[in-house]
Length: 251
Image (cartoon, helix red, strand yellow):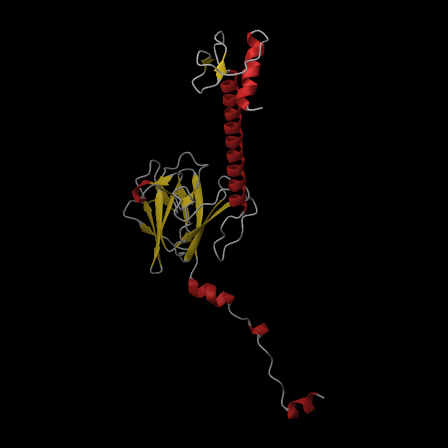
């Protein structure tokens, strides 16, 4: 039995139990040519075909989504590794390329170290004492930043003395000379009890410096003396072997 005969039979059952034997010109059909009862508002065959089409479309969309997910997972597992680099143990981690604007900045090269030329020691605030190293060039003493040099911290930074100015004094070490200058501080700068002007005074080894309520002991370090102290002592020198005549006299 053909599809048309089957639908004619079903139409006959719905319309009153009489199967339709042959499609006449006067019977009602849907836009697709399927026979319909005049009392029907929609074609059951068209409705069935529409539902089947919707199910096929949904299945195709679901399959496409699964394929995309599988492809993305495979790409993340097979990430490209640049020659010479180590593989990333965490596949979920984000790799930062060299051109990424959010990549961490590379550390700058450290500036050249200055030569050590002396030390400042104070016992005004700590029983154990505070020691600061002086370097060749300018050494700013204070409790804040050096505004005249871009706001960098003081070289001899002591935060515990509230009576000291942010940029209180400067010790200048150059060409074997040591000089102390006041930086127009509020409470002044003193060296061995003498007031220090902004024009400066020469510092002697063992001088006592006062800035605010802090008293410092200044000791200079000369590179020649340090080199001599670090040289080999006479105890480390090998002893000369006595001659055979001297050995016989000793025996």
